[in-house]
Amino acid sequence: MIDQAQTDKLQEILGGSKQVLEIFPGIKVLDLFLASYCLFSHLSKQLEIRLLSSKKISKLPSTISGLVNLDLLEIELGKENLLISFPYREEQVDKVSYYIGEHDQRFYLTIKPKQGVAPLDSNQVEFAYAGAEADLLFLCGVDSLDDLQQLYFGYENLYQSSNSHLVTLNNFIPDFGTLALDMSEVSSYCEAAYFILRDLSAAQKTLPDWLNSDLASLLLYGIESKTQALQNVDLTAETFLAVGELMKLGAKRLFKTEPAKTAIKKTKPNSSESRQHHLIK
View 1: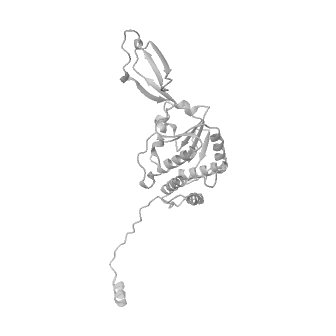
View 2: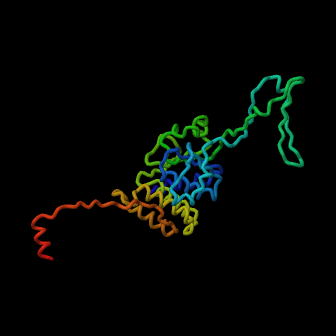
View 3: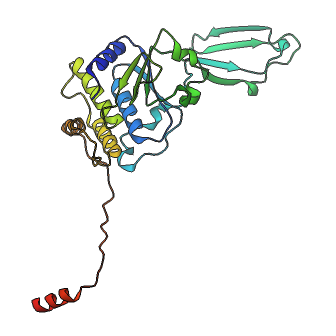
């Protein structure tokens, strides 16, 4: 279970944050994705938050695919500023101006070339988004910032800014961040996410109906997938506590396991067994 002092500090940070980026690495760990998605979905009710990963997720198990909106997952960090670029020659730009149409409420940018020079080729104008701002970066399962690839390279200042908090959720204490949520004592990211959300909701006094049944089902699925359907020998009482509370909140057990195959070895009866069988007959 996550230490209460850590979730109290997280609650304080969330209370002062207006823009939150929740980021996890693009690794194929279903438990990590489901925990990140559920944290994002719950926090989005009260915060402006984006969910980002260095890689897209294209497919989920059929039993839970209808509970997840993968379109909410982004892979590009820059979104604050619209960047317009084009090949530049000095004589092609004499004056740049803009105006806003009163009737159609559109923004018009005018690039005037010097007299006698052909104007810019509109086919060579490119549009992109750049720049990112955040009060809080919430990193889930990030061992190294380099693992975030395009979400880190080029945005190093954002991760090092004194104006934003950097919170980590991992099973060890990384050498970066302002608050480390230590989940080394829990079985899975989904179990950790459940206790974090439960404690945050308790602090906000939104219990008991604080988590919808779909998110509860996803968290339960993540716990079961990580623990081999609760078969791991090193499970603790907290795992079963989380499972029980999630089911009380309406979670459905959607995780399917393959039925165990028991090999039956056929052997020839020995002479003694044959005589006994004969006597029984």
